[in-house]
Length: 137
Image 1 (cartoon, helix red, strand yellow):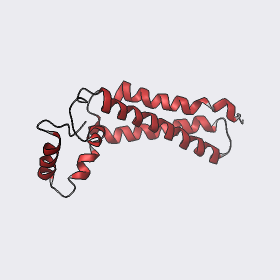
Image 2 (cartoon, rainbow, N blue to C red):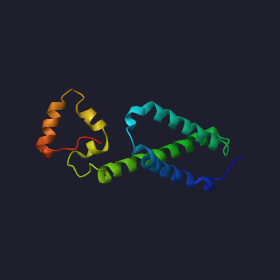
Image 3 (cartoon, rainbow, N blue to C red):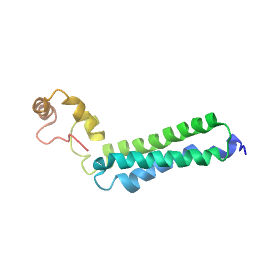
Image 4 (cartoon, helix red, strand yellow):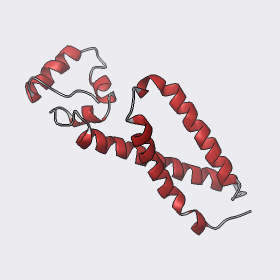
């Protein structure tokens, strides 16, 4: 059974909304960095279920994977946009000064101290931002 493209135009919008909802409903609560494998596995299962749903309406496998890629990008865009806006403007630590990328992701700090010079980084950012500095999420 083939369904016209016009009937599935709402799916990317729903994927963006799902990304925002997952951030506000789940990821804002608790310590999720310890559950990486579970998060990845659940998203793979969600992708497989979505691919199955899409395949029920389109027989061409390339169309299914194309649609799945669009939906995945929309979902991840909604999720990461929501996380970024929240962390920069609404997080309880947003009033503290510090590097903006450090407020968005912990990967900033990991990248900066990849050569084991955390003490130099701390000294530098304290000189730049003052005594109290936000260096993470």
